[in-house]
Structures are given as C-alpha cells and as structure tokens.
Length: 575
Image 1 (spheres, rainbow, N blue to C red):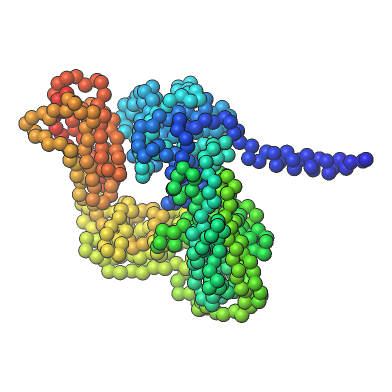
Image 2 (tube, rainbow, N blue to C red; image 1 turned 30 degrees about the vertical axis):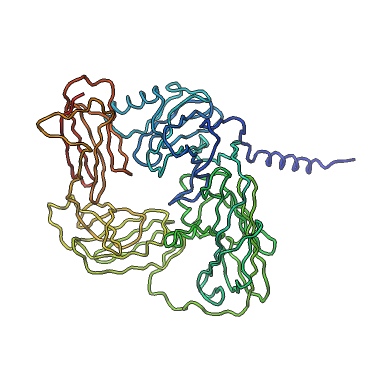
C-alpha cells in the first residue's frame, strides 16, 4: 500500500510537537521537607495583585523545620529582606530549572556565614547577592536551612518554587511529579453574570447577577426559582476553590472551562506565567467584587488589556451575544491538577427584545482609551497614565473638595479604589502654601472616608508635589516631620549597664506615624552590626555573635523614615 509522504511528515511533526509539551522531569526533584507534603497555598492561587508562584508548604504551624535542596546544583542567589520572601535561597540546577526557598528562619551555617560576610562588606542589613557556580554548591537532599515566617509571610511555612532558569517563569510544581493526596472535587461557591454593553441586560436589568449554587452528591445545581433571562453582550464568572486531603485551606483550582451549547468558548489552566504579567490577576478577577466583599470571582471573559498567557481556546474573548428567543445551556467545568472535576449547568433564556437599560447620552467625563497614554490636567492637578495602565477603556471621574485639617492642598478624588491599575500613573498636586523649610517633608497621602491617611510618597519640585502610584482614591498634600519612635523591651538607665549576659538578641520596637521605616543602622562599640526587621511586629533585633568580649559595651541604633526623620537610641550593656 502506498503511503503519502506528506501526510507521514505532518503526522510525525504533530506527534513531536505534542510530545514536546509539558515534558517536565517528574523524578528529578525531591521534596524540600522530610514530612508528607501538605499545602497552605498552591500554584496560581489568587493573591493580592498577583498569582501565587509556587507551593506554600505547611510546617506544622511552627518555625524550625529542616529544609533540603530539591536537587543537585549551586546556590545562585541569597536575599535578605523584611518584605516579600524574607530570608530566601535560590538554587540553579543543571537541568535548566531553579528552585526557590522563601520565608526561611535561618540558613545552614556555611550559607549563613557567607551571607553575613556580604552584609558586613556592604554594611547593609538587606542584601540581594548573586553567586557564581563554585561558591556554594549543594547536593540533592542537603540541608540548607530552617523554615520560618520572615518577610511578608502571614504564618510559619515554606514558600517553594520551581522556575525556568532562562526565562525566570515559575512553573506549577505539580508538573514535576510532586504527589499531594487529593481526592476531593473543587468547590463552586458562586457564579456571576455580567451585562457588558449599554443595552445588555440580565433579568431586564443592567446589573450583575450573582447566584449561589446548591450541591448534592457532588453535583452542583441552581434552584428552580433562579430563572435567568439575558439579552445582548454577556460575560460569565465563577467563584471556586480546591482543598487537599491533608489541608482545609482554600487553594486555587487548576483549570476553568466555560461552554455554550457544548462548545468551549473559554478555558484557562495554570501551568506557568511570568512575574511581569502576574499583576494582570486584577483583571482576571472581578476586582470591584474583591475590594467590596473579598470574593474572588474569576471572569470567564477577557478585558481589552489582558496579557496573561494562561488562556486557551477563547472565542470572542469569552463574550456571548444573546439576540434570539431561545434557551441556551451554559456549562462550567472546574478541575484541580489531579483531575477531580466539578460541573454546573446553567439554563439561560435569550430574548430578542432589546431594552435600553443604560442611558445613551453623551458622557460628561472623558473616556480614556486603555491602549494609549492619557492625561488629565487642572490648575492644581496633573495626571499622566501610561499606555496600558488601565485594563479597559474607562470613563474618567474626578471630584475636588476643600482641604481638610492638616493638609496643604484641596482634596482630589480620582476614580474609585475599586478600579484596578496595571501600571503606576504620575500624580502631581499643587499645594495652597507650604513654608520653604517644609519642602523636604511634603508628601501625598490618600485620605479615607474616616479621615485616616496612608502614605503615597512624593517630592516637592517646581511648585508641585509629585509621586507615582497604582492606587485610586482621595489625595492631598501633607507633611511628615515626626521621627520614628524606638523603645526597648527591657528597662535601662544611662548610669548603669543593663545585664544581657544570658540574652541571645537585643530587641527594639520601632514605629512610624506616616511615611514608614526606610532604614535602620545599629552599632556596637561604634562598629556596624547586622540587624533584622520584622515589620509585622515592629521589631528590629540584633543576634549576638561570638566576637563580643565579656565586658561593658555600647549599643546604638538609628531608625529613619522615608522623609529622613531619624531617632537614635543608645545604652550600655554587659556580657
């Protein structure tokens, strides 16, 4: 029988292409802990302003669990920061991947010695240093440190990632063969239906319709009283989460699919993403619903400016146009990585009767095209939004109010805090009057409904105070002239040295009223020493080393806020 060589070539090409997808090494990496893996958070879980980039491994609710290298390689990066991943290590592996270990309490002694040497060489408490392959090689299963709660962690755990070394894109660790017992189906807690044009309607109204499904025997369904009539351009959304057998934490699902009449119109799955695009989570979800009610409704339709690469097989951006008089069946299909599946069928009645549900009048506000740079200017306000700062075209809203007590400008209400931004915009406000001696202390603050203030930064230049921000709200000019407050957790006097012979640390509490702590410097007997800052506890602490002689010493610490206001605490102690 004659075979068509062209067809054979096409078949082989497609076979190779299919085989090239998801070819991750499944037996290369070991677990970073010796206990059975249980997750407090998983890959792709929705977090504030980002997708979660790895596994949050449970450590029995405590610090100090031994952490091990997932495979052979070398420590390529050591980072010490009060924020983010806190104390963290990065290991480059010869197979093209990098593993990351975050929120550590402490490093293995040799690694700790290396990190401290960098700190002393730079006289810096915070470091982010890159290493060459010969500095700190590690073997698979080698002890590298203890788990902790440093940085932005909200409780003791290990943050564990696997990234592509070349692209630095995080990959879902499940793809590398990590087995976490999971026999439960994802939970569906709500669905949402969105009218997306001025003449679209849901049950005759131009407002979002939210429904909570019931579940019986693992099957989700809506009440018979939940009748839904739609017209025009409509989008759908869903709130859902997953749990594992050993954890009750509400983690993320792996994939969401939306079908209409049995045809897929929307699909996403969480294999990998880029950190550069992680903030697009704010348009992947219903951001306003998250801000108002802390619900995480994932939209099954795409905004105009959505550069996430997690989507596949999306038709017409996931938006359906209902113009006939018939019944349509909508199906949600939700899966976790293990393939456990939950579904919900939704019957909607389409109507051809168009009802004008939004006033079709000329807008009084300027409409910003999200794909272009946009500017807004008043006598005492200038705003510049770079291209692709917004996720959709928006009607820009602004309101001015008289200045309030303690401010140096009018109050400028810009849009709503419930509107998300991808990029920072430039905000410039003209003060009514500021004495020259306060020019270095001025800043822009956001003022909430109760009069509370939060710092947005800013510098005085050419008669304006200017900052960059990704927030909307009500803004004004204020000043920060108050230095941070520092206190010890023990009593001391200037006349006598405090006895710290049995102490392991020197702890001080440092707080600031507005602009926040920017830097802190400690010295013993006039020599710089490294400290750690736990901003969650307002705690700065120095850990004693072996170099101090048994005698009286002087401890001095200076804390400075973002407006260069400083406070210094000085006392003597004996070892």
